[in-house]
Length: 284
Image (cartoon, rainbow, N blue to C red; front, side):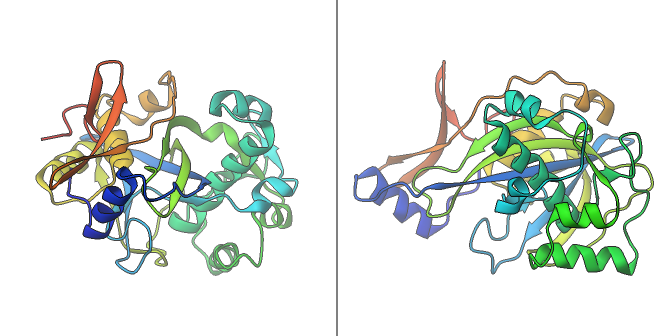
């Protein structure tokens, strides 16, 4: 995997010496948006702007922190209940509701894709006109909540369009930490992603296998959770197979190993430690 930035290397050293405390985590959700292409599943990636405080320059999936209103307001809902999501996400019902709402909200904010419809059997066909853009900007500046937007448009959140995929926690030595649930979803028929700017300076659709190849060559910078997720997805020939996959999700938190001048991220498992991006041949 790419070397850690110098500031994080130094922080990892300080933390390893017992001279720093772990920062608290913030609950977050991210969504791997998929569509089919001749080479297999294709994924939507954003490159975070160099000015961002977290993961600057990294290619990521749409996502972000939970907004308190994601759980605090009644959201019109279709599909598996928050209680059922809580079982899948290993959390209580309130947090499960917040995570699913955050997943839908952040996906709309960062791609223009909205996992909602006029009924439990319907999904919005197009979100590209000026009124939708006004709503997206209102979500971004927090002048409107997801629940308010859905209520005004008489829409229901389609939780059945999401599948849980993974659970990653930022390493303890990092100053900004997130406890993030990863979801997968197919782009609904008729909807189109668009370059919405903001935290990203570039967006791209790319075959999963090509994204993995570019990561291994050093051409595509990613954090371990993104790289591992893409590596896992190379095992599937299409989006339908991804959505039908049975997943046993456990939380993963890379840790830093300091060995002289070398600082590397590893994951602990039953067979000992391994590089944090090692899955499906990702580590080189």
